[in-house]
Amino acid sequence: MLENKKGDNFSEWYSEIIKKAELADLRYNVQGFLVHRWWSTFIMKKMFEMYKKEFERTGHKEVMFPLLIPKSNFVKEADHAEGFGAQVFWVTEAGTRHKKLEEPLGIRPTSETAMYTMYSYWIRSWRDLPFKRYQEANVYRYEPTTRPFLRGREFFFLEAHNVFETKEEAEAQILEDMEMSKNVLYKELGMPFLGFKRPQWDKFAGSVYTCAADTLSPDGRALQQPSSHFYGQNFSKAFGIKFKDEKKKDKYGWQTTYGPAPWRFMASIISIHGDNKGLILPFSLAPYQIVIIPIFFKGKEKGVLKECKKVAKLLKKYRVHIDDRPEYTAGSKYHDWEIKGVPVRIEIGPQDIKKKQAVVVRRDTSKKHAIKQKDLLKHIKKLEKEILDTLRTRAEKNLKQNIRSANTYSELKNKIRKGGFIKVNFCSIDLNGEKCAEKIKEELQAEVRGERIDKREKIKPGSKCVICGKKASHVVYIAKQY
Ligand SMILES: [Zn+2]
Image (cartoon, rainbow, N blue to C red; front, side, top):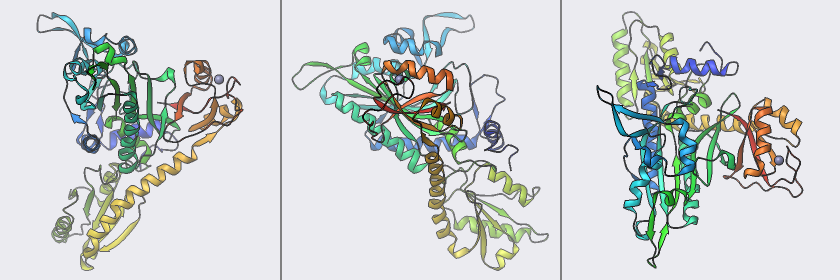
């Protein structure tokens, strides 16, 4: 068991898992830059792989762009430059004599202004479109406060930057992005989320509008996961991304971006699936999917170990590890692998050898079963699916229980205290509604997350805004956030 309980002091529990599951070492001496140990690196690489498959499936091609962006590129789109201005690290000198560079170079906080300079050379004709590219990138943002896997000055993500002939095609991409989020987060990782169109005051700097997926943390806060941005022609006009249409007329491209961050998925994996014993990983992510623990009895060590190796061979299609450390008790080994979230543990002792069986323990339910060796492979295969299903069902139940409605301000005030998403009628998600959102922020320390885009929610005629009492135009969700 961990020292902290997930339900009592979530924040300390989260930090304890990061340390004890050896996900990151926080002793490195640059704030907001995380040292990732092999366990978390492996998990994240798996998530990157899942996403790359989705990008390939949807016709995106991979590219690699430089880390540094000249200041002259950076300032081309005014809203973007203003929105990111405070977050950019600048390289201004180099070498032993600290020679001043001719032009300051920004370390990418995101890559629009690096990529679109080149897009303007590459895109010439309607035949080049749709133009769908993505890259795996570390990005750097000078954040005032940092927290492992939640907010960092360096974080790891994928960014897709697409150009289309028409507005309609570009907007259809936003929906395809949401489908990719569903395929990876929900189907493969068992993490349910709500899809939102963000209000105008909360859009990405330089975009026309932003959509995003929010997961729910156990402490009742929303956590933004992948987001998509519809740029309209804002960047194509600033960077000269033009093409000749079929009638040879010059047109500006319509653009979108999509940014899933496996680095941030880690935060949701830890907090949504983890429990008081530690991390819980689905098979797809686990660095070791099965750990075999030999139950040693004096004089029988060799025979037990031999049997463990035999079973490991039987299960060789999985990532199997035999924990044969002689100086540790079986109990302390159980504990270690539970903290690290290994989905299945197998125990083998002299009695099991006699019965030609192994004891199989599930990490998600702690259920224990003695399984005949000849049935072992089939059994594990079944568990692979069952464990993911259990994690997803659990998370989904929790999310559903934490979506509530409020009809009045005092109801909203009461319900938001318990956390979760509160559904209310709201006057406007364009800038006219900002005043009402500010009141929610100031008095309730919560945010308007937006209207659902993954589900149609019509407003009832005659509905009034829960804050100002004016005619409501949208059903929105309100939550505290990270
Ligand atoms: Zn209002």
